[in-house]
Image (cartoon, rainbow, N blue to C red):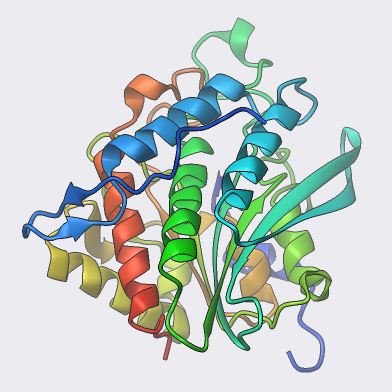
Length: 323
């Protein structure tokens, strides 16, 4: 994930919508936790942390790394165990380093439903660590416990819960694990390869186009404080989705959500916005270890991940309101 430079140039770099439009992880992460108001959390912090730990131990998931396939297999194995519909969607994209052969993973709950929402996170990690203080380490792939692992853990947990207790009748949920989010310094065509391919070729999924998208990225740092990401909040439909999400967080007394304006972040929501689909980004970029080799398990605080997962589940259970 990358800081913003120019919203207009970022959105303009993505195609516009046409007319109309295995390493074994721990078992199901369904142990209970408690909210600050005493209610049950469907996903415990401990189980989410265990998922991040397994992700880190299997990786890194950087393109070209011999361990990347192991991370993909780990994710696919875990979500297939839920009994949900799972698709691995390969694609090839041109990059400054030549062709990359990448794979998105899509989990669909109630795949027949026409009214759908999408929750997405990237599963790859960065091929280099350009912000690391040690120049010798800057060309080595990062672990990505927070920037990669946290989003994967939340989505795997959502898949397990929603497979056992499905979304409301008539509402479908897609969980997208994007490959190739981590790109190159340069224009926007060199980032977000997976979300861009999925948004542009959604027809490959066989599912109805989602009416709303929520991206989860970097939600496990200690002292997690997710603000209203600026690009999301600048659009009326995005603002309404954030109103719902932050309202639920406030209702539950969760401190991981800070209902105040945040910076504009270039992330996996942009390809969907460019195609006219309302999309928001839940991200906390105030993370000094971002794109360094210090993005490790000891920097992770799992309580925030559990709060994010619970807020999203509540939003879904209430019909995922976006209007």
